[in-house]
Length: 261
Image 1 (cartoon, helix red, strand yellow):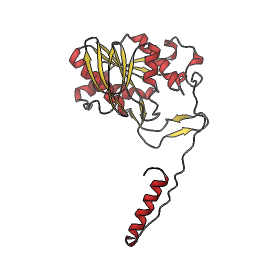
Image 2 (cartoon, rainbow, N blue to C red):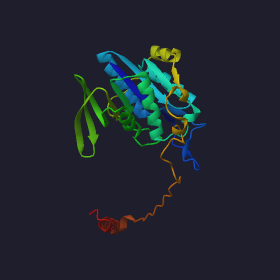
Image 3 (spheres, rainbow, N blue to C red):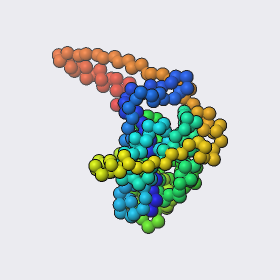
Image 4 (cartoon, one colour):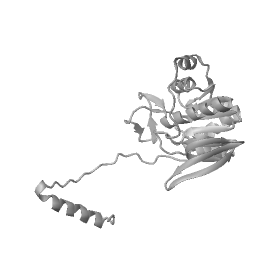
């Protein structure tokens, strides 16, 4: 069985800054980590390989320092890692990112199962996984909280607003997973040594059959048109203990005005 995991390196901070002219994130000078939900994807892939046999490969598109996260993924159980890096990829939106990832997966595949976190903590779009599946022409499922192998495919449980959905997807397929799927294991010392010593594959723009004009910011059909920081205004009314009944009546009146009661 061949499994691929799509990994993203994200800022390890809540103080993310944006370039107001380009509408892109400023990543320089910020600590980075593996996107938390991608850790569940790596662990799910590791468990599959442990039970079924095969290989687990991780892929990440980003700057050269993304190598750190790929080595951590190998320490967690991945067999191979591919760094997709080139200045020409800079500023890519989800579509341009998915275009590159799908071409690399075609180049290195085919894969029976492709896993990714439901979304990244920096963009919060949840679009890249489904877009990759669409470009590869394979079925996909999102918000996955349980996975069971079934003959030539998987049965998954999706967490949706009003409960759960159960789906069967034949191989090959792509799944984006939630954080309650599993509990990722910490890398062992031998795993860290293996990750440190591993030879990573590097893919650049010249390795892919994508015209330069369709890469990065110029190849992105979507733009962040405006960057602003919301102003939070708080209005607080205080009631003394002797006026507690008056305060409760005020809350009830406000809830009725908002059609909540």
